[in-house]
Image (cartoon, rainbow, N blue to C red):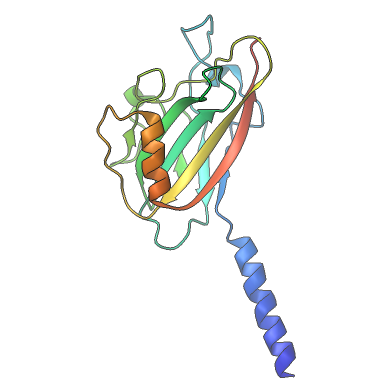
Length: 180
């Protein structure tokens, strides 16, 4: 009988662990970026440059804040391309509305800050792949054990180092885009 209770306790623990997976979702991104999310005004693109809605759940205990990045692993730079860096999102916030990546819209929660993308600007820079194969854009939410305080001009790749140094968990989704 004792073994049966031990087995049942282990099953409950295992099921609760599975149910508590840190997860990132988007109501706007269904695998392919749409025109409203693509780059605007550069390289011939006329998209809306609107960051997708994002939401996350089941952050680990001890999370003090969140960060979000969007990275193009297929950019022809040899080192990828950071399209979006956002950090110090308060721990009680679990969603960003569409357009939160545009600094002028002021849709970020208090305390959150835009980092500099690889185009040298703060905020979201939509996909704008060159002709050829589709590009993978990895959007990641980071659960952090503490806030980070990079200088406003800190490159996105170094902000990534700070994020990983303070990481509790991360969750990602992948969107694709191909030059029309």
